[in-house]
Image 1 (tube, protein in one colour):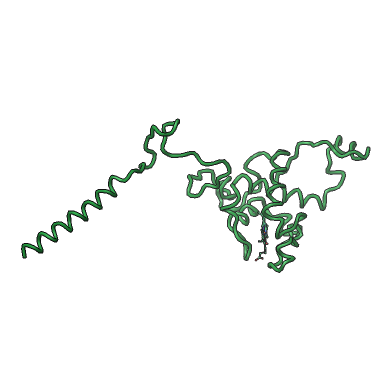
Image 2 (cartoon, helix red, strand yellow; image 1 turned 60 degrees about the vertical axis):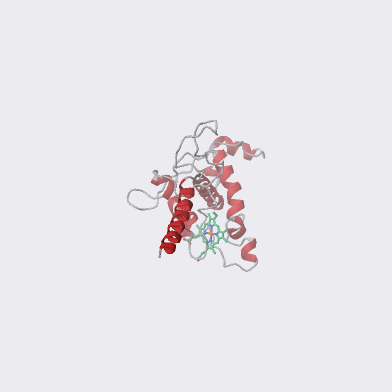
Length: 201
Ligand code: HEC
């Protein structure tokens, strides 16, 4: 009996030892200070271009594309400049064009190779759909289209939508929609200088 008690005691001691090791493991507690890094914080900043998950997203307009009424918003959360639009074009061509095609008809290379027909962005329903609706499709997917929440940072989603609007406009815009100076340039046969863009819907 005594032998068993001793054996059990040793086993318990050994187990407790293991447990202690885990307690003393060299790791930081959340937000603990550190003298290893120059800013004194053990928490490291996000790498540029990281797509955060589980962050505090307190700006519902920006992060969900929905208003307080739960409906898709009809305006962009930040001003769309030419630089934003250029970035949107670049990201659209990377993430959307493989299926939707560079002009948005829904006939991208992936579709030509047998993937389900992607929707054309030029149909009437999508021409009048609010920008918040497109945000929802990008963030949450739609039907067989996968979501892009882990690949495309929040601001880039909005820039892509601005470019989708530009693609849609390109079908129906007339010279009457052009700023006077850009039209004058065009009539002279020269490419229009980059004018500030305003996209509201
Ligand atoms: C892998 C292919 C693929 C990629 C990449 C893709 N889509 Fe789609 N998308 C589809 C398909 C397929 C549908 C139709 C889905 C269905 O009806 O089930 C669709 C539908 C849509 C719709 C229509 C939703 C509706 O109400 O009918 C929008 C808007 C859209 N995509 C936007 C985008 C944007 C913006 C991107 C880039 C961020 C993108 N898609 C990337 C395949 C893709």
